[in-house]
Amino acid sequence: MSGQAKDKIANRSAAALLDRCPDRASMKAEFHRIRLNSVALTNPLEIEDQVIQTSDETSPTKWHLAHMTWFFETLVLNPLHPHYQTLNDTYDYLFNSYYQSVGPQYSRPRRGFLTRPTVSEVHDYRAYVERSMEEFFANASDDVWQQAAKIVEVGLHHEQQHQELILTDIKEVLSHNPLMAAPYAAPAVPPSSAEAPPLGWTAFEGGLYDFGHDPNAPHAGFAFDSECPRHKQLIRPFELASRPVTTGEFLQFVEAGGYDEAGYWLSDGWAVVEARGWRHPAYWHHIDNVWHEYTLAGLQPLNEAAPVAHVSFYEAAAYAAWAGLRLPTEFEWELAANSLPIEGNLLDFTGTKTTDPFCAPMPRAAKAGGSELTQMFGDVWEWTQTPFLPYPGFQALTGALGEYNGKFMCNQMVLRGGSCATPRDHIRQTYRNFFFPDQRWQFSGFRLARDLLT
Image (cartoon, rainbow, N blue to C red; front, side, top):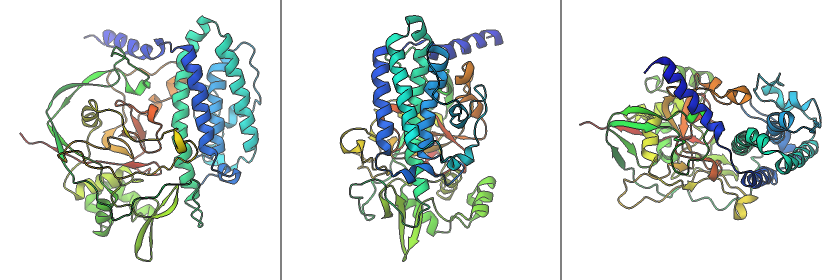
């Protein structure tokens, strides 16, 4: 196939993401539902909780609420609503995250310095933009809606990403407080003595398989551009662990001196361990000879049966080397997940979880036989050994949306499956999350893989 022909296929694949025109009524209902859910996540927080920032990779809760609003104002209302007037021109600078094509941005590591606008003013901003979006849903012509529909849909999934960040960021923020404050009421945490299901293995045949989002599949839904185009990958026979590595199993690595032995670590990972003094996963505390973990329910005894969380890619790879195994590729993970329903410990906005979302990885009972895959979705994002790179034929979208994923395809690693903080209707089998290999404030864990010798 000629290079020109490949470019045409790639361009069609990218364009397909914008060619879909989601139904206006359903998008309006989703807009209201998701916007309400964002605010519900902040209800247990005090104003003081929402304005500080404790690391360069996190943002204040207040900033998340404003940035989610900025997206709709900047990419929908400003260009497509003929009568829209911005509430405050400085917000375009304060709440732009990384969109260079839109304009300059306030320094990310300094977002916690922004005492103004106040939390109350940010909620006023949200209400102002929501009223304008209500007008837009009602009055936009069919031609204008055709331009806006996909952008609105991206914006809603973008807001769901920030719902997860609200929870992970506030956990990181509050973990620095010596009071070990618990912002959310929580159900009882299973005792650390609970047993994890036995580790089993599921075998997969080698072959040439299709991966990525298929816009032509029946009931094909939303996907980000990084999940496209659908393409083939050659897979060697392999086996995938039936569940993620547990906290108790990772504790064995800690107590066996895993953080002292350079031979288990990638060179960059060992440099990070030495520079930062890592001795265990984030949020662990050794108090009176008992291991504890800071959670959104406050300080709790280590739940050894739950999937280990808040480990970096480097820590996951070191554990795998210590165990004589490896991490799966993202394509091995997707092949295993393709036939599975999306169920698990994900963020639900139903029942008491609307106001009390207790987010923590939890144990899961083994399936009959002990070898079937469990916890592929929810609990923890699972590190893979695959760098976040473009799929063959990838074409970034045009305009500001082209900055959403494509420019980050360097030096980051792919995670799959969602976590306990991921909204249930946001995750899918082809979803590619990505973080730098040293980052661990997300609910990130891993499962093991091994080659199947034939």
